[in-house]
Image (cartoon, rainbow, N blue to C red; front, side, top):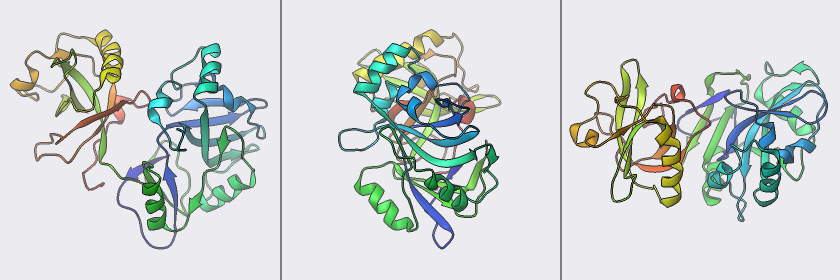
Length: 308
């Protein structure tokens, strides 16, 4: 189940959780260590050996966010990026010592073979808290009843935002529901990389867009925020995707942006922070945040700047 972006809901009937800057992981228990799955359905068990010690009754499925906490106890996606794609067992074990993850378990979908998805959020939450999930590498993060106070606490602790959940909401697998509302403190969006251009350095800016039936709709050139480490990661990911033709819709990219462009297959998603969008959809003051390997291009459905 996915959240929609919007303003913080007010009034009775809502609960509020911190928004964790990590990746979504579901854990399925079939006797023994859990099998871990990414949002895409990919098996990611090998990436997180710390979670192998977690035990729940057979036929239990929980939902949560995998994070790496920094020295101040705040999630660091940059640190998590070193963990999330590792599948080699010995390397994952070494990273588990230097960059340990914490599994923030926030929902209970099945328990002991019984389907809990049709229960209201408050009932699922109560059952989850009764499981006593407190370990060195996993926990049930808190849920609150005061939205503005939760948002203030999130800001004070430099967290990404807040997720509000309607107390009566059932769990709808695969759906993006208005019963869950994500409130991000920064305006960000996920965009598909269609090409790149050189600048002072080899990679001066990314050409990004959103999918349409005619090709990518152009949303601008993103150059800010790309440091030396990010440039190396981006080039390693983009160069194997080189293609001769532009993946953007015909005429979508202005001549001054397409001149000297290196086109790529539109397979990589990038998260961008920006000020707002111009009437023609261009991002104003965009800055690169990170590659989103956990998202597919098809998931880059653009939301209005007011969160609708």
